[in-house]
Image 1: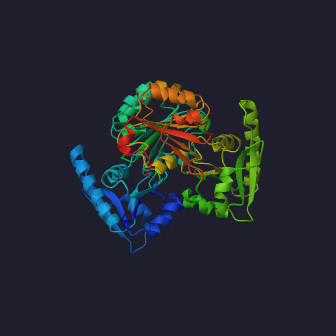
Image 2 (image 1 turned 120 degrees about the vertical axis):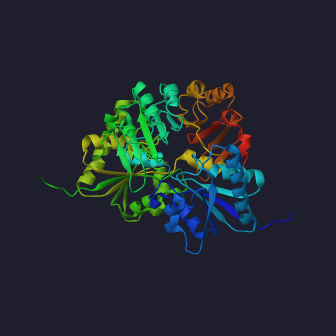
Image 3 (image 1 turned 135 degrees about the horizontal axis):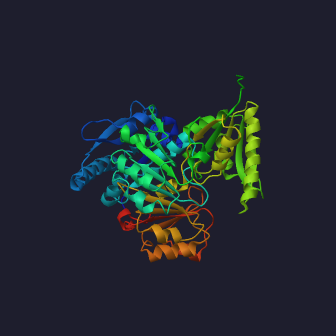
Length: 248
Length: 248
C-alpha cells in the first residue's frame, strides 16, 4: 500500500484572552507547525485567536485567515466551511503540519467543530490532534473566585442568544447555570432569572480574560447598559453571599 | 493602618493527567511560590495533582499534602477543611506565597472550592488568585475529536454518583450531557441513557488524560467491566455517526 507523507492538523484553543492561559503543549505545537489557520468574519481579516497566540508564533510561520460568514443561511455557511476545510486539507496533503486556532476551547462552541466534521468527511485518514483550551466561563469563575460546580451538583451551559426560555424550563432541575453570549436577549434572560429567584445568585462578566474585563455584580444592570458579544452570566442556586460575591 | 507583608494563595488546576496541558501561567507560578499544598485522602499521602505537576516544581520547594477524609460525614469534612485552611493561612500570614493544586480545573468539582470558602471566611483580605485548568471532559472530547457543544446547543454536566435520574429528568431538554464519575451507578446510568435513546450517541472515556486512557465506544460495556472512579460519559442527542464515533 502506498504510504503518502501527509501532515497533521492540530486544533488549538488559545483560551479567552491572556496568552499565559494557553497550555504548554499548544505553545510547543505553535512553534513547530508550518502553517497556522484561524477564522474571521468575511467582513474583515482579523482573528482575535491569532492576536492572543501571536507571542508564540515564529515570525517566519505563515498565518492564513479563513473567512466565515456571519449569516443565518446554513447553506452559505456550509459552503464556506467545506471550501475552507479543502484549503486546509490541500496543505496537509502536501506534507505540511498545520494548526487551526480557536478562542477558548476548540470543542466548546467553536468553529473548529465544523472543520473537524468536514475533515472527517473529506479525508477520514487525516491525522487530527485536538488540544483543549481554557474556556471563558472557567476564566470568569476564576476571576470572581466562585466555584462553577461542586460536590454532586449539576451545571448547565447554555447560549443566551435565544433568550431566557431554557432558564425557565430547566432552572428548577439544575444547581448552576452558565449563560454564554448574554447580550442579544439580555432583558429576557434577566426576566427569566428574576422569575426563578436567581437574580441574587447571578454575576455577569464582560470581556472575560481581556484587558477591559468587567464584573457586573447586579446582572440587572446589563439591561440598562447593553453588553457586547463577550458577556456571560454565572448563575447559582446557592446564595452568592456564601461566596462573598463582591470582589475584594 | 498597619500593612502586613502577607503572601498570596494561588489556586492551580493541573489538568487531567498530561503535564503539558497545564497553562504556562500556572507553570510560571509553580516555579516561584515558596510552598505547594495539595489534597490527599486521610488513608495515604499521595496526590495525583502533585505527580502531574512534579516536573515544574523546583527541588527545593516544599510540598505539603493535606488530608481530606473520604467520608459522608459533613461535619468531619468541614472540620478537616477548616483546619487545613488555617494551616495554609498561617503560612500566608508569615509572608509566604503558596499554591494549592487540584486535578482538572480548580472551580469544577474540586476540593479547592472549600479552601476558597474557608479562606474568605477566615481572612477575607487574603490575596486569592485562581488559575483555571483543563477539565477531564475537555480532554476526553479532544481525545475522541467530538465537539462537546456547538452553535446554540446546551450542555449539561452532572455527577453520575447518584445514578441516572438527572438524565431521565433533563435529557429531553438538553442537547449534550457529560456524566462525570460514571462508575458507581453505571448500570442505572446506562438504563437511563437507553430509556432516552441516548446509548448510540454516548461514548465512555476511562482514565482520561492518563497513560492508560481507554475509549469505550459502546457504553453498555461499562456495566460488564466495572469502571473505576475516573470514568466519564459524553452523550449527544445528535447521532455520533456524524462525528465518526470510532477513533481512527
